[in-house]
Image 1 (cartoon, helix red, strand yellow):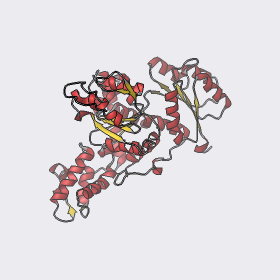
Image 2: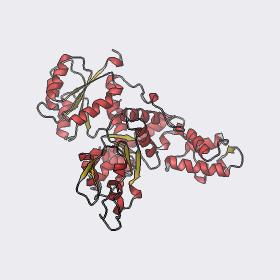
Image 3: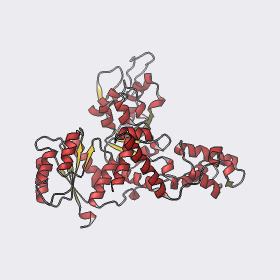
Length: 433
């Protein structure tokens, strides 16, 4: 059987979530079947030809466990990946005993989900190659190519997207790419940095305000949410949104309507939401700094941007882009300077690289950038490690050691390692393969 003959069955009684999963996975698979209940799923499975099941646990009628119990009686049952918004330990244990291959919590980490689906269906051909990239967009590294492949699947849907990653990794550029590759590309992308707006003005800037709603409100303001009508709203640093404003954003997302500050009447609004944060929102939820219900709305699909130190192949191409931006396209990196750039850890990521290259372009009198034109921290930087396997082995050892120290608690281990919990989970899945 070839990959194009494979069939995936998606089972979920939530119409919106079911359609979302089906639409996200269809570009990846030749045949995706959707079932709205456990009963419909068993009927489809009875007809045969299903190679993998994506199964919701909590459904009216026959639930996920009921479907698994029926499948346990069959010798030819396809593998099952279980999805749930509840993630009770007891249900997870029982699902595994009944034959489920994996147990994923909603909101689904798309990278983790698609990796599992592809592994069980034998797929993996990239789809991002069919999409156009903006001029000077650099994605030479395997990490960025994999991310673009995920993004190409997400962009055509209406699903909210949460971009996570360290500061300076280029989250706004990825948000613009989501918009560029979406059906909304002909309309506006409205970008808002939440931290750039004072708490007192955030609500009126986002949702608009009626005339006289507060002191100084001498006219009606429509707000940035309305400005994104028909297009995409990008909320950068969403993790820093004040708690008082979070339920109001949640209401807009749930109702599909927005109220100006000082008004009772809500007006329909249609936009695609992309948000970004450098914070671990799951940890913020645990600490009471971020609403769980809003997090679920934002993180229907999550994509994590790799830090620059994990995409070494992109460092030199990015440096050439920044030289052109600085008006120094005629200048080149010497081999020694390139070695320093590729061997540096880049705590400030792409933003730091741009500053370093711009500075070097100014200081280098000729057409070659030498190590002495770089900041002192880079002149002493060790050369990049050539053996990628050694780096991967060191990372694996560090992760497993942290898990052992914390008794298997993944949240605490991730916090000690300085990475997100989602990234830790993704790495653990890789180690199982």
